[in-house]
Image (cartoon, rainbow, N blue to C red):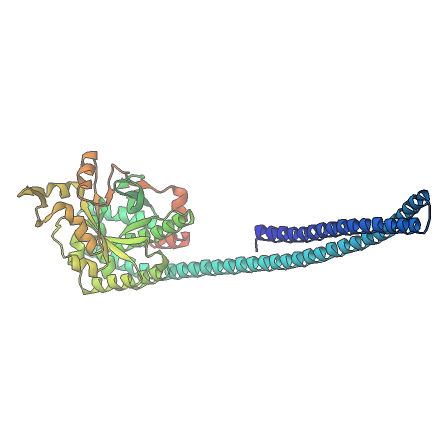
Length: 452
């Protein structure tokens, strides 16, 4: 029972007691007035009878009047005694009534006090239970991250040895060798930045998702674009290291946003090499198992070409992630004539299409606007078709307001591009919170490691 409930109960009790006293008092006053009237009438009658009796027996009128007055005096003296007795009785009744109301009030106050005490005990017990649960979850997460770090460090030792062997066995061009060394040093020294770009709802332009990007910096601090380092990172098997670092930071950023009550999701890029790595993926899956409560906030993204090249191993690993509740997104879409049933079976929930590529495929046929690769479908029905399979379309690379106006005519619900916000680096302080432990970074660096 809250304060308002307790106050209401006490107020009701006082009202009831006051009403009882008022009722008894008014009834007593009425009865006293009625009795006074009756006694006065009786006194008058008695005085008249005495006077008449004396007059009949031969007394003079003055004697009769004196007898009348004397009788009335005696009667009113007697009445004073009766009135005093009645007032004493009424006072005792009032005192008894007040005592009864006071007893009722004390009883209700004791009940309210007992209920408030029970409520305080319940709240304290619930707060302690929640605190213990939260502490247990934090310890579990710390243990899981520590286990993940130990296993990944062990794996990195083998990856470094294998990468060094491949590096020594091949006769690379000087430029490629230099770039490989730059990438290895950037990973070993944790010169990897996390960038986030907003994805907005249309037409409101409210941020509902972010896409995450990783950017490497060389020893001079220059930011390298993916086109520079992917050419050497993919052949050398470094994409699993980049993907793993990106995923770790995305998970921590999502948790940070959740603490701020910002319910947004993050698209995290994952390479086909990571999905097909039999030694890396079990640890990756174990980490996601420990964070499966983020299934509605972390989406794994890979290109359309990579999705179509996936083999049985990659498909099986995608299915295991989907069994934990995670879903996928396809970007770099260059063909809109896709098998939507196949996408739905693979738990693909988002399809990213370049804005200009989408608009370039629009043409008018027989008075209706269609997509070149889907001539039997109205262009405005394309988004509705994908939604029937549980897939939302996101137009990316939106650069101009004109593109937005044309996209809105196609009933597409989400947009991404520099018009809505450029990729921005996460602040160093925030990024430090999302970094793996320092010892885990330095150990591979001492061994001239590749990275994660």
